[in-house]
Amino acid sequence: MPAWLHLMADSFWPLLLAGLEFTVPLALISFAAGLLLAFVVALIRLFGPAPAVAIVRFYVWLIRGTPLLVQLFVIFYGLPNAGIVLDPLPAALIGFTLNVGAYNSEVIRGAIESLPKGQWEAAYSLSMTRWQAIRRTILPQAARVSVPPLSNSFIALVKDTSLAAVLTVPEIFQAAQRIAAVTYEPLILYTEAALIYLAFSSVLSSAQVRLEKRFGRHAAFAGKTQ
Image 1 (cartoon, helix red, strand yellow):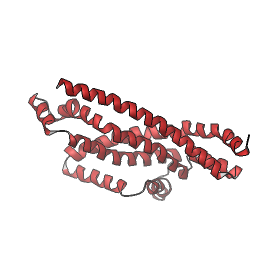
Image 2: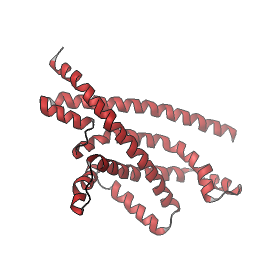
Image 3: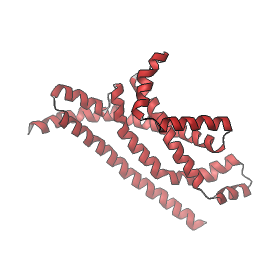
Image 4: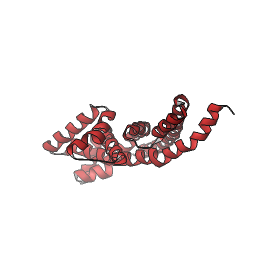
């Protein structure tokens, strides 16, 4: 077996284990928390009072207008100057959650606004309140519209978790860096890390296709029954 292939075989399990222990949980937790935050922000943008709208608009503007790497540095390396010290993993979770929340709030807001005005009128004609209309009529339809962009956002987040390496979170890329520092084979190790990210993304892309088809069937059935 060639030396480079032997190195890849030896390092595969440490890299994969780092992905399963840190990359996947980091992506799942921050995306779930970010999606909840995005939902709240989107609703405030659409239906909230003016002061709250101004606050969330500023939050979205700030997060979307600055690089994710800078946000992570501010949270982990900058906040200690203000007396706030966070461990690497919580700092990464906060950074990714805030980033996901800002971007996906625009996805959710756009999905809700894309629905025809007649959907609101139909709900009101059934004596629904605004929140009943949102919960029973608007959100189920907006969810179908949001599936493709939200799925893409999650796949992008899985790859973006590699930035947590700068916070010393021992995820895939950080593990590759540590092995490369010992073996002096950065090309082989970073290529292997890229292949593992590619495998994760491919699995998620396949799941996205199935999810979109499932929601598409529901949409088609709903269209036939109307």
